[in-house]
Image (cartoon, rainbow, N blue to C red; front, side, top):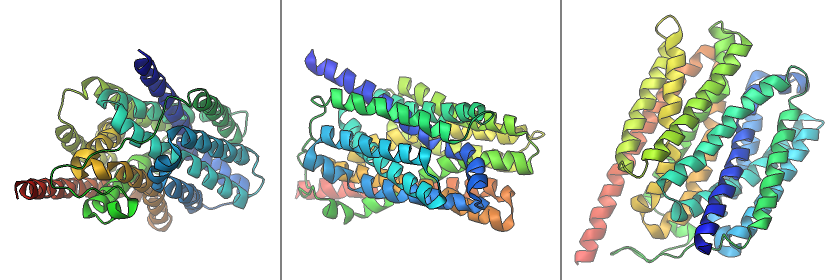
Amino acid sequence: MESQQGSSKAIAISYAAFLGMGMQAGLLGLAWTPISQEFGQPLEAVGILLFAGTAGYLTSSFISGAMAHKVGYSRLFIASAVIYLVGLIFGVFAPTWPLLALAVMVMGAGSGSIDGSMNAYSAVHFGARAMNWLHACFGIGMTLSPLILTGLLTFASWRAGYAIVACVIAVVLGLFIWSRRIWGWPAEHAPEPGEVHRRGAIEALKSPLVWVSILLFVLYAGVEVTPGQWTFSLFTETRGISATAAGFWVSFYWASFTIGRIAFGFVGNRWPIGSVLRVTMIGVVIGALLYWLNPFDGIGGIIGLGVMGFAQAPMFPFLVLNTPHVMGKVRASHAIGFQVAGAGLGVALVPSLAGLLAAQVGLAVIAPFTFVVALLLFGVYELLNTMAAARRRGLVAQAAD
């Protein structure tokens, strides 16, 4: 009974943590306009904040597997939440542009450590349903924060949005302290037949599969975040949609994403993960095409936005759950940290590249750019499957020898 209670506590606290991280991740799309006006920054300067956050996120998530093995999950979660909270508070009161960028970097370090280590923990201890709902909480946060900030901006500063997220993370920190005895340490796994027993991060990085999976997460995160980051600007400045309506459609995008994760949580244990991933990859390509071409008197772009959000919903949790199968349990705990770091890189790199292109040729380029990234995502996923199948055949042959 105690272990079941502990598992329920772990799931509930994980949900709260991902809700808070999602709220922070969803703020910048709407907050960027008032931030750029306050600090006198051009459109493409959003890349500075994205890369500042990514620098912290990449560093902490990349080493999260090694840190979890060294200090255990409880201490790592508590320390990460403290760092995250410090960054948020610093961001609320940052008086200058460089100090805001520094605050975003500290936020990234805290969230990256929680994200990487909690995904590794969840891949071992949670099933497909709980894993989807964990990431649905992230989507709920991303859905709520644009709505909250849209309301706040009518009478308050963009800083109020970050203050609300700081309160949520303060609660999460308290929950981590309260539950410190339930998390334990990363599990040690025996190697598969024919597999060399390697647990080190350096050894994991020697695998081509790990690098292809990192690229997959870069592209996935990019195609997820780019519409959320740029749809508001695209709709208001090139498609003649009002700011209020555009803000609603950004929330609609994240809502479709969240609804998809809840829905796939109900069916996640019934359908093969590989089949779900392939179908949803195709769905993202179709949605991105509609988002670009914007048919049906301008309604097609909104439909495409919703299709992309829903189709992307199970990708991150299923890709993480599939990692032990793709590259072996021995490498999985380190590989998941690398994958989360890759996702962090994609969050900064891909929408920033879209912003640079938009600054050169116009905001209309955002939609075809998103379509191209969706195609690349599907292609890299198929490459990873081919390489994983070859790896499994090699292991079977070694075991037979």
